[in-house]
Image (cartoon, rainbow, N blue to C red):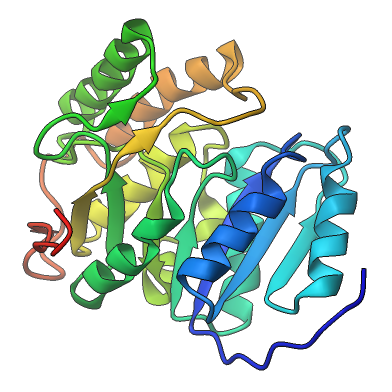
Length: 264
């Protein structure tokens, strides 16, 4: 595939962990760049056995806005995000977005996340703020997800409607201050821990309503070990912070209502 050069000074990095996502990485990267041409995309691949890594190398060779980190093995969601966030911080990106590769997170929301981030330190694309916006999930999974959010709020006191939502935009200084090197969790509880660290330190958090659509192809990476980690990690976070029910008085306005959007 012939390489071509795109001269872009990107202020935004989009970090996407992958494992067995060969059918999704090409379409998702094209759609992101269609929506927001002046971003850098970083895929963090966990040595996918289906050949995702080779496809990503080809994409990167063809477009210098696309980058790849290869892990020697599947290290988990948290480790993948930490690697990607470190890479982004080292290169000076101001806004860092984390999202899935499988189109459950709509790339069309990227401009909305960035707009909200102008007045927030962390923006969470929320499935459950101002109603429920989930498509193509069985009722059992929706109930489990809602119960998980209620469980997190009950134990930690963190007033976030969707603490396990993975579509996020961080300011770079937020990621620096939550101390990625000391993160304890690795599975989906990584999302809870990073949100909790931002909240307990008094950073400004916005929940932006999005519509979450179940993956187009591939398979879910959820496992019983990940589920168990999520259960005990919430208690650990609460204990480490003395069961504090409010953030430190470091910044005012820790939870800002989502701005109105013209297309809603």
